[in-house]
Amino acid sequence: MRLITVLVFLAFSGGGAFAQATDAMLDRSMETIRSYYALHGPSRLVQAQLVLRETQHYNGPLDGQWGPGTAAAFRRVVSTRIAIGGPQYGMTTKPDDVPAVTDWAGALILHQGGYGDLPD
Image 1: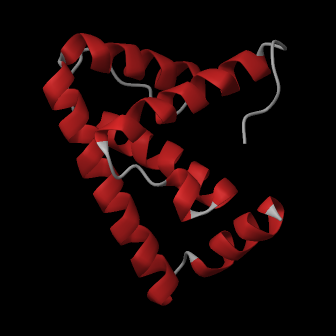
Image 2: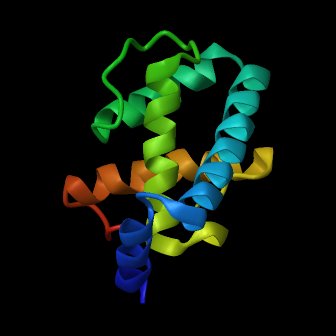
């Protein structure tokens, strides 16, 4: 089922109403994530940048600053989570949802190292 969701997402993400809805969901998620890290400070964002770098989503400095590279990295991760599990799985609409994004990326790191299952 998840493969079908990914294929449908990829097929329609190039344009149309589905892509616009997905972009709007991503924009809302990005604002929630940015706000979370603005509230929790640069040390928490550095931790997230490190996880994003380890999963090869981020190649910028570990500076605890919300810039275009950090935003793009989070956008890629959230897009992947939406493609895998649908909007209800990938959306980050409340501050409490934000740690799940980096937890998912951390589980991916463990899997790549041979220490766990591939995260959903």
